[in-house]
Length: 467
Image (tube, rainbow, N blue to C red; front, side):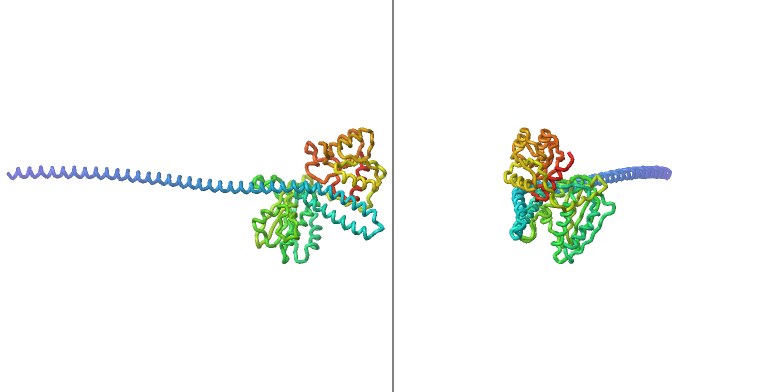
C-alpha cells in the first residue's frame, strides 16, 4: 500500500515537473515571440517615423522651393516692371525729343534770317554807335535763342557732336578752378581723380557744359553751403547691369561723378529728374532743361546717366562716357582771333528751300565779296550746272524738297562738275547727317544759326582747302 502510494507520488511529481518544464518552455517561447514582435513593431515604428521624417523633410524642401520660386517670380516681376518703366520713360523722352528737335530745326531757320540781317545791319552802323548798340542787343538776344535751340537739340539727342578722345583727369583742374570762382566761397570743392584713368570718347565742350550744369545744380541744392565732390573712375558695365536698365550697352566706360551734400531728392523727383522742362525750382528760376540735356548728351554719346539721392544726405550723379580706343588724348588747338577773311570774287551756288533764309545768305556772302547764284531745290541747282554755269562752291542745306537731300545733290553736282567744292549747312542734326548706308557725311557742315565771322571763315576754309 505504501509502495503504491510512493509510486503514485513519484509519477505525480514527474508529471508536475514535466508540466512545469513544458510551461516554462511555453513561457520562454511566448516571451521570445513577444520580444520578436516587439522588436518588429519597434522597427516598423522606427521605419515609419523615418519615412514620416523623410516626407516632412521633402515637404519642407518643396515648400522652401515654392517660396524661393515665389520670391524669384516677385523679383523677376519687379525687374520687369522696372525695365518697362525705364522703357516707357525713354520712349516718352524720345517722343518729346522728336518734337523739340523739329521745333529747334524750324526755330534755327528763323534765327538764321534774324541773325543774318542783324549782322548786316551792324556792319553798316559803324558811324552810329547808338543804333549799333540797339542792333547788338538784339543780336545778343538772338544768339541766346540759338543757345536755347542747342539745348533743345541736346534733349532730342540731335545736337551736333564733335567726338574725340579726351583725358578727363587732364581737363578737370582747369574746370575746377573755374568752378571755384563761379560757385562762391560757401561751396567747398573736393576732387578724387582715379589713377590710370582710361581716355573717354566724347565731345569735350559738351562734357564741360555737363559738369558746369551739374555743379550749378549741386550749388542750388546746398543753399547754406556744403561740399561738392568731383570724381573720375573706370567702370565695366556687365550684361546683367545693362539688362536691368534701358538703353545701356555692356562695356568699358569712364565715369565722371558729381556729389553734393544738399537736401537730396525723394524717389518721385529722381524718377522725373531727366524729363524735359521738369524742375522743382520756383517759376522763373529754372528751365528744366539742365539734366534732360545732360541725359540726352549721354545717350547720344553712347553712354549712360545715373542718379542716386537720399533726403537729408545729398545726391550723386554719374555720367558714363564710352572708353576711347585711342590712348593719345589730343586737345583741340585754339583758332587765332583774326579778322573774318573776305571773298576773292568766287562764285557760290546757294541752295535752300527757305526763300527768306536763302536771300539773307546771299546778302551776307555778297557783303563778304563773293558772287552768288541761288536755287530753291536740288533739281533746280543741277539744272543750272547742266546748263553750263560754273561754280567754285556749292553751299546747300541738308534738308531739301523733291526727294533729294543736300548730300545727294552734292554727290551729283561733283560728278557733273569735277573739282566743285561743297559746304553743307543744317539746323537739324541727327539722321540727316548720315548717308543711306548709315555712314557719317564726309563733307564739311556749317551749323545754323551762325554769325558772319563763322560763315566767312568756313567758306574761306573750304575754298582754300586742297581738292
